[in-house]
Image (tube, rainbow, N blue to C red; front, side):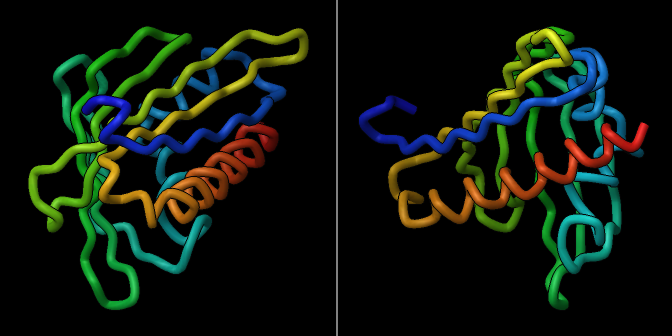
Length: 149
């Protein structure tokens, strides 16, 4: 996906948690179920949550939302704990077109800073602000989950 044919959204947040803890929250099914999907984030039921956290490994976050079953799927392209995680992202029913999510975690004095960049085909440009808001909501929930201990 070349930048001329893509659109990017970016979300940055600071955490009062170690880079390792923030990184691991992306790959531990129990933790993912507390902040990325399910009733703590939006009105949906988690049907299946599967994560194979290695380069080439796949994930599936299968939910029921407003009566519709949605499977968020992807493949891990880079797993560099605790600095960088890169994976493909798409909704299974929307075909084979993949977008790419990069999570970069930088240590800071009192924890770390996470920057998420989601790159998608330019044809999805009308959804960019909705995508950015979705990630912002999820990451804000992650901030709260990790602050609880």
